[in-house]
Image (cartoon, rainbow, N blue to C red; front, side, top):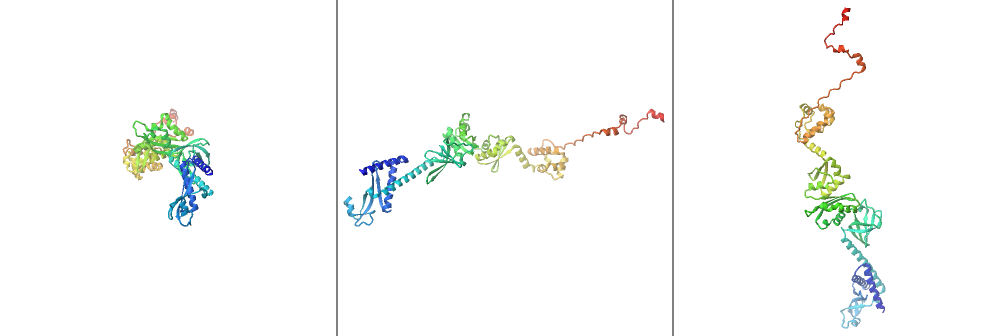
Amino acid sequence: MGKESMNKDIANLIVQIARIRNVDVTYVCETLRASIVAGLKRRYGSDTEADAEISPDTGDIRVFLAKNVVQQVTAPGREISVAEAQASSPGAQAGDVVRVELPLDELGRIAIRKASDELVLKLREAERSKLYDEFCKKKGEIVTGTIQKIGRDEVIVNLGLIEAVLPTREQLKADHYRQGLPIKAYVHRVEKTGIGPRVFLTRTHPEFLRKLLTREVPEIKEGIVEIKGIARSPGFRSKVAVTSRDEKVDPVGACVGYRKSRIENIIKELSGEKIDIVQWSKDQQVFISRSLGPAKVSEVLKEGDTYIVIVPDAEFSIAIGKKGQNVWLASLLAGVKIEVLKETDYRNRVIMSKAAAVGLSALGLDEALQGRLQAANVINAFDLLNTTPEELARITELAPEAIEPLKQHVRDAVWRGGEPRVEFRSPAPVAPPPEVPTPEASLTETPTAEASAVPQGTAPEASPSTDAEA
C-alpha cells in the first residue's frame, strides 16, 4: 500500500512539473530516468550498466543493473553470484550477463532526492534553451511588450516569459517612457547566459523601419513594392528607396497612403521622425537627384568617384539640410559620395578651371587696357581674375568701382568660351565738379558786369568825364 501511495505521488509530481515548466510529460520522465541512472553510476562506479523505467501514468519506477554472473562476487554493482542469478533466471551460468531489478529502498532517499534536484535543474536548463530557441526565431522581428522598469542606462521590457533590455543608445531621442505602457521594438540580438536568454531590443535600427513599413503597407508585404534601401538618422529623418514590380502601382503613393495615413502611422510610432519616400532608379544620377529631396536639383555630374550635385542658390540650405543631415542621408541611401554646389559656385569653379586657357585677346578688352595688363605680366583670364582689386586698379589705371565690372566681364567671356558679346572699354574719366567761390572771394576778386563783358585784349573806351579832365 505504501508503494502504491508513493507511486501515485510520483505520478502526480511528474504531471505537475510538466505543467509548471510547460514541457511534455514524456520529457520529464526521460529527464528523471537520466538522473536516476547518473546516481546509480555515482554509487556503483562509472562503468556500471544501469537503466530505469518510469511510467508517467502510474508513477511506477523500476531500476535495473546489468551484472556479470560470477562464482565469487568482488564488485556488487557489476557482479552477481550464480545462485542469486538463477533465482531470477534459472538458466543463468557463470560468464552470463543478467538484468537485475533493484528495490527502490536500495537506492536510498538521498539518491532519490538528488535525482529529483537534477530533474529540476535539467528542466530549468531545458526551459532556458526553449526560450532561447524561441527568441532566436524572433530575431529580426518586431515584438510588443510592456515597460516594466525605467533605468538610467536601459529600459526593461516585459515580453511575457522573459524580460528584454532596451539600452539608452537604442532609444529615440523623442521617446517618452512610462511604466506599464506598451512599446514596440525590434529584436536586435539574443545572447545565451547561465540564467537564461538575454534579449536586446532597439528602436533605432534601420530594419525596425523596414518592418514597420512591411506591417503598414500591404503592397510591400505582398512583394509588389520592394524596399531597395534605407538610410536613417534615428529620431530625426529617414530616407527609404522603393520600387514597384507592377507598372500600375505607384511605390511612393503606396507607402504614403491615402491622405498620408500609412506614413503618418509610422511617423507616430517613431515619435515624429520625418520619413522621405524616394522612388528608386537604375540611373544613379536620377536616383541621387531624387534622394536629395525636398531640394530641387539643377544637374548631377560625375567626377571620379564623386557626384557633383548643382542646385539653385536658394535651394542650397535645403539640399544640405540641418547639420548636413539631408546630403548625408542621400549619400548613404545612394551608396556614393555626394558634393553639393550652388549654381554660382559651380559656375565660378568652371570658369577658374578654364581661365588659364583664355588669353587676353579673347576677352574683348580695348587695346590700351590690354597693353597695360600685358606690361604687368597679366597674360590670361586666370591671371586677371586672381589679381587683387587694388593691384588691378593700379595696373589698369581704372577707378576702383570699375574693377568688379571688369572681372565680371572676364568671367562671362570665359563662361561663353572666350567669345565676348561686347567689348569692354575703360570708362571715361569723370570731370571734377567746379569749385564754388567763397563769399570773400566774390567781394574782392569778382569783376564788375561791365569789365567781365569786355573781351580779353580789348581796352575799355574812355568815359566823357575822362575826356573833359584831359
